[in-house]
Length: 119
Image 1 (cartoon, rainbow, N blue to C red):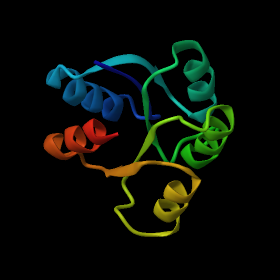
Image 2 (tube, rainbow, N blue to C red; image 1 turned 60 degrees about the horizontal axis):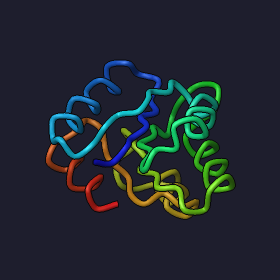
Image 3 (cartoon, helix red, strand yellow; image 1 turned 30 degrees about the vertical axis):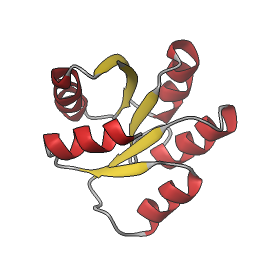
């Protein structure tokens, strides 16, 4: 079972994602963070196998947090979440910085599980 940290400033989005992943029986959610700064702290405490992180958040956005996570651990596995779709500068930047994939909102459960299971 993979240990997952969910990072999203929207409680409803985080709960929806948690419901999808825990329902599969393949993931255990070890924590929720509301922004990138919280994610960095929680990553150090919980050492999850995978981080699922929103790109747009207050305090510290997902791309800045991704940069910091990669600096902490080059082998960190991060999948970004966005409502921006699969194109654009932020999508490209996330992959360049080390994200393994990007999940689009609104979620399609099968798509989420497939992407997260591949990393």
